[in-house]
Length: 56
Image (cartoon, rainbow, N blue to C red; front, side, top):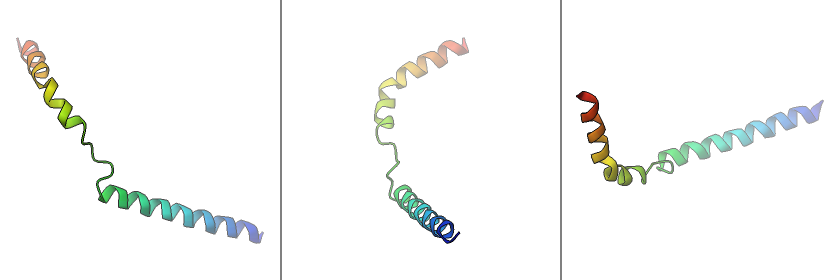
């Protein structure tokens, strides 16, 4: 029975470490999208054309 408490404790500690790592990665901008804004400007004219065609 003691091994179950040990395994639960270890798994909770590992989960906390992963949570802290994830929070630090988000705060440091690891998941910021740098690629999409640069590509979006290439297709901006096509979006304006389709919107104007839909309004007619």
